[in-house]
Image (tube, rainbow, N blue to C red; front, side, top):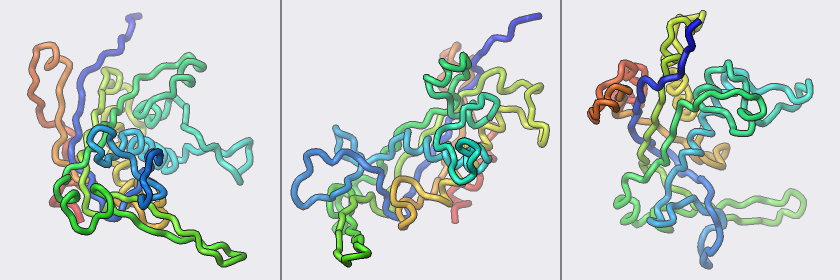
Length: 267
């Protein structure tokens, strides 16, 4: 019986933008704040001082929503009143194959599966528009004051949240690694016959749609973090391209799956 070796066959590049429909708060360090600043600040690049969306925040939110959507949140100690708030670790699940294992889990289970999805940090695009705006309070951001009321004393407790304002746009850059085992026709979904590679891409599309109908960052239940994704290109580069020093990317067969996120298709 011949040995099946794991081989990278291609990389799929999904590029576009994230548009903020409401102000977004992804928290950063509050150390060294000056008087008059916000109580809760956003994460910023320490070299440019520009707000950005960490790849870990986008990837984590997408995985969390997909696990909920696919029913992978299990009851805690057989008690349906509380659920385990940790990542799914079942290696047979496509979501786990796509997003990866935690290092300690892979080691303890003696199971390894390469993480397919890479999510780059999302860099602010329309810098000048925000920096020169008369309606921002801090560099490229706004400060929103919220007041919580003590239910017993009626005392007001104001808090200032720094937010990246609605209208900000960030670069979206996703990279999906496809291996030979992902394109194996023997590994198909019994429901629709899709090989795992296509199922990965469809999970990405589903994850983006879930985030659009949810929120990104904190304080989402109070209106923060509503976003829209715009996909500009879906391209690929094969392992053979890398070996032959062919740096030109070609359109991917999966481009049509992201038609809901084209600029023409955006609502």
